[in-house]
Image (tube, rainbow, N blue to C red; front, side, top):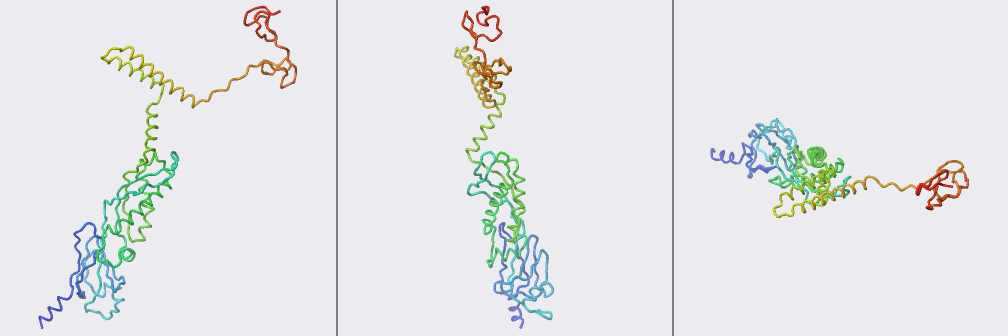
Length: 352
């Protein structure tokens, strides 16, 4: 009789627990090994875990961290599904899943293909980005329903691809909606990360997951855009072009003085001339671009009738229509004389 009792007891489970010795397991199905769970069995749920009982494919009771003695009192959903009444004490069958609710840290993300964005300075450009993120299971029931299914084991790698694609999509939307110029992206990594974190939360909530951190380590621009930025930086470093030409001349003088092969004065002259010419060329080109040349104005004389200025050589005044006198010429040199002139402004001969 005792042997039979021991055999029956060995077919029952009286302790249920999961000691996680991995770094990437998200869900572990407890191995029943064909046994039944004894009513009154001890269930131990450690910190950063949740235990979910499943009865014939239906989710039943969920247990948070703690120690439980299984009974009909603390298994209300299972009791309802099994139709247990009047203090049921017999062994029963059920699947038990342990869900890892800790944070999974230092997960890498990156853009596999360039992301298109519209920039105010450079127009349409392509960018690449990479960084790290962390996530956790926030709702074990939703996660089991929407993601896990009926597998016996589920790891981070099984869901990582979905999360990464969501992150890249959310970051692209965040950059587009923030309208931050490409030149200022590096100064706004943290703001973009927080914006993307909030934008992605609803997408992961639907899977029972929560994004706990999202860090942008780098956003790289195309090579041609980086060259354009370098040119702008160089122009900013040059600053005052007149002072730059003076600096070039001084450098040429120093190099000529240190030249051990003679020809110091000739080299110094060439260097100073080149520096001065370069400075003048930059200065003239900048001034020409900044200030358009004024159009030359035609010479004018006052109208003999109304006094309004009219072009030299006009026969009639465009204001009053009065005929203008013929232009007098000097008898000595033939130069034109203005009305009322007593001496020729060219040769000084007295006007008759």
